[in-house]
Image (cartoon, rainbow over all chains, first blue to last red; front, side):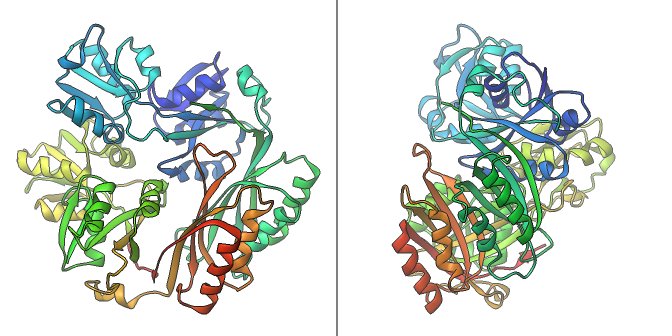
Length: 285
Length: 285
C-alpha cells in the first residue's frame, strides 16, 4: 500500500499517515492537488489530507478537490499539533542562537521563544519538517528547528523543548481518501479498525430562491432523528446568496434512515454529493 | 481615530483598514490578542481583523477572542487577496534571482514562479509585508518580494507581476471591532456607510443532550422567516458532542422579529452571545 500526503518527510501529516496506515510506503507530494491526482491516477492507493483545524477552520481547498474528484473518504483521524524544539545530538538549550520553522509554528511558540531564548534569531522556513532537515544537515549545535515528533525521529534530533506551543487545543482532523472501488479496511491500523460509530460526510447546494431552504434541508435529517456532527455554510464566490453546505452525520449511507434522508435531500437541494461513510476516528493526543 | 490591525505596515489587513477607515491612524500589532487588548484598554478606537477566508475557512482564534472580550462588530469588508511581484525601481523580471515571501503566498504563486522565474531561489519570510520591506531596504535589483498593493505603495517598489496568484477566488472577510459604547459610524468611509442591509452576527452553544437541538435552534429563525447568511458548527475541544455555532443572519438585533428570535433562542440554547449588528460590507475586488 502506498499513501500520499502533502508536505515533507517528518511533516505533521506524516503522523496522521502513521496513525492510519502504519505499514504503508509513504509518498510526499508538494501540494493537495498533487496528492489527489496521485490517488486518482492509481500512482498511490490512498491520500491522507487535512480537512479542518481547531484554530484555523476548514480547509476549503480540500473540500473543493473532493467536489472535483471521484474519491471516497475511507477513514479519519485527529492529531494534536505538538511543537518540539529540536537540535543536533548533545546540544543544550543555552547553545541555541538560531531557530528555524514555518511562520505559523514560530507564532504559536512565541511565548516559549521570548522567555527561554530571548536572544535567538528567529528565521522563517518553508515548512517545519524542512527546518528540521536543515538543522540536521548543518550539524551546528547553535541551530534549532520547531517541528513534529515525526521530524525528531526522522532526522535523529534531540528534543530541547517538549510541546512548546502556547495553545495546546490545536488539533487537525485528517481524512484518508481512496478510489471508489477501494476496500475501506485495507491497510488500516488495528486501532483505526476498532474505533467508532459509522458517520457520513456530504456536501450539497441549496436550490436558488427557496425561502427557508437551509431549514428545509436540515429537516430531512431532523425528521428522521439523524444527528449532525458538523454543519458549515460556504458562500459560492461569484454567486451572491448561494451556498455550499458541508455536513457530517451520524450513520452509514446504506442505513435505511440515512438512505431515505439522502433521497429527500435530493428533492430539496440543487446538488448533493456523498463523500463517504466511515468510522469515527480516534484522537491522537 | 486609531485603528489596530495584525501584521506589518503593508500587510493585506492594512488594505482592509484603508477600505473601512481611510482617515485613521494605523497601529500594527504583532498578533490578534494584542489587537483585541488594544481596543479593550482604550489604547486604540478600533481593530480590523480577519474572520474568514474563502480558501482557508473561519479564523476560530478571532471567534474565541470575540467570545472572551466585550467588543462589538461595527462593520465588515471583503478584500480580494492579490499577490504582486515587487522589485526595486528599474528592475526587470529577468534580473530577479531571489524571491522572498510568506510560505503561503509563495505556494499560491507557485505556477507563476515556475514558469516565469524557474531559476530564482525561493526564500520564505515571516510575512509578505516584511519581505517587501527587506527588498526595499536591500536596494538590490536581483531581489523581489511577493506582497500586497499596499506594500508596493508603502515601500515604493516596482510591480513586476500583477495578480500572480493561481487561484483568484481568494477573499478575506474582515470585521471592524469597537467597544460597546462606540459610535458605529465614526470614521467609516462614505462607501462603507452607504452599502448594505443590516445583518447580525452571534454565537451560541446548544444545551447538552437535547435531541435535534441544532434543528430546534434554527427553527427560531425559520419560524420568523429570518434568512441565515452563515452557519458553522465548531466542536468544543475536551467536550465530545458539544458544539459552538457561528451564525450571521439577515436583520438588526433591534428589529422586532430578530429580538423575538433571540429571545426564543435563549430558551433553547445554553449560551447566546450577540456579537453585533452592522451593515453588509462591500467587496474590494
